[in-house]
Image (tube, rainbow, N blue to C red; front, side):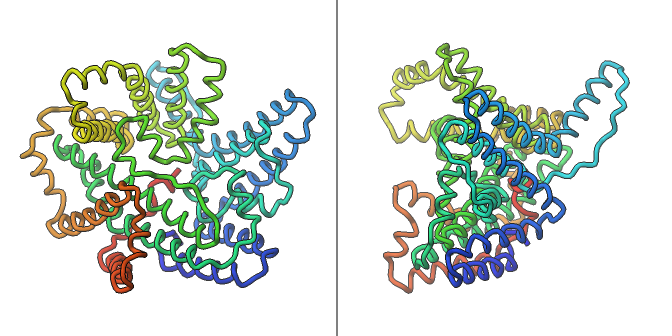
Length: 483
């Protein structure tokens, strides 16, 4: 029962109906049961790990808070974080480290006898681990009180709308909302259903329609350079549609329960710099990295070189978190280099824009920056999408080849689509872009629709539903669900 299924919609409809039917004092029980049932359906074998992580974090938080001295608080926090990272490291990185050591030993003709371990990555462990770490750190810094009500803490740890892939919430925002008595509100229900429907739209009509097209390029042992260029750009569109759709559904579900989750995306492909991109992409993860990795590394540092080192380390952590593979490590380092290079050359780029009079046309200048940023992001995603380091560098070489950008070659590369698939994708992609265009004018599309005549509103809603049912493709889950 994934998010994109009739079964999930029926499951969630029962939860919402029951939630507002029963008294507030029993709702936490319902949400715990719903969260664990949802997780069990997806990955029942890892329920014990989820329970163990919850119990461990719950008591770790209380122990940290009870310590009398700052040193003892810090030691308790480090023990708690170490335990959580041990769980994550064992399930996610043991084989990565093991195989990396095997490769090094083989290169130097050394004997390495540790066998490959059959370890399955638990669903959502990367996400709930980050949420747990932030909880413990915030208690240590006095920003959060340790939660004594185990029921509410369990919901915070495993709240099913955002458990699988975020948004990564802080306890100080989510716990008070879970405890507050939520009343049945038409606006919350209406907005939640719209966000869920829009998530279905992006997932089934954009992301899942592109998935086999992108796969046909990256699974091809001998793709042309133009196919790599087109495939990488399409993958960037697929990745955004896929992940933002998951956030839409999570936000929509939570809103129907009266809970407001943090917005996770703000049209990142219209960013004017890499720094701007990371303020728009996977926002809850970016702010987590900023608050719990970058700021501690920068504490007391004034030299630019130290700040740059902190930036690179932060993005290295981002790469390692995304996946246990060297391709993700390189991807993270590329973005670290982008950020450092962007900051170091900012003054020179501004002078160049002034010298060429590019800054005299703000709109054109903005679109130049958007285009460059998007292409830089796309290049990094060659490593993100490739299955091995060798393949990644071969694909990167093709991506950077001037001949790969030949317009005729790009046009020919569109043969990876069938004519029908291309027409369907272009049609719905245009609708998607119109939606984003309205949002960029700082106006809510849903608010504009609510001001239109009843016939227009419901015609659009019916159009979305019928489009998903008739033209929606069925994929293999969400990309970020693998983390």
